Length: 222
Image: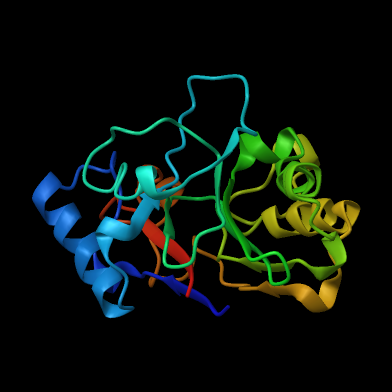
């Protein structure tokens, strides 16, 4: 089983559902991005994160009946991570100033795409994501492969709840606690608040970025 992953940039257009881009343009952007990697939007499910909750560690498995859900509109049950055991079922996550975390179990052929934001981290979200796979699928943490997207650096986005530490420092600490071993982690060190290839909602709010938007991560077992 091969893992296919891709990360969009500003050049691919806005992938967000709340960033102001009109629906047709956003949907065209998503379709074009997925097509580049031979992924059909009809085989894809969006991780839809909401903030009107006190629980930021909501995880669930999706199957054939969930394909295409949330890809063209907001009609999908909210979750902070989705899991699939099906090959050719892609998981898609738009990102603002958070970390997208891909977790792949190469032995059991399980794929998770988890949204790790500030709220999630405060509830030990990176650790809880791994625990979900261990508890529900008996995954071996030492065998899991993890990929982390770019994230905002502490100079422009310090985590106040963690003594102003860096996003990735806290994520990596929680992954280590969960039993993930360093050689199995691919960490993109890009700072989204300073690298113009990526949207940053926080920099837009500060007036440092002219256009609001979201980039996206997609993952599929093929």
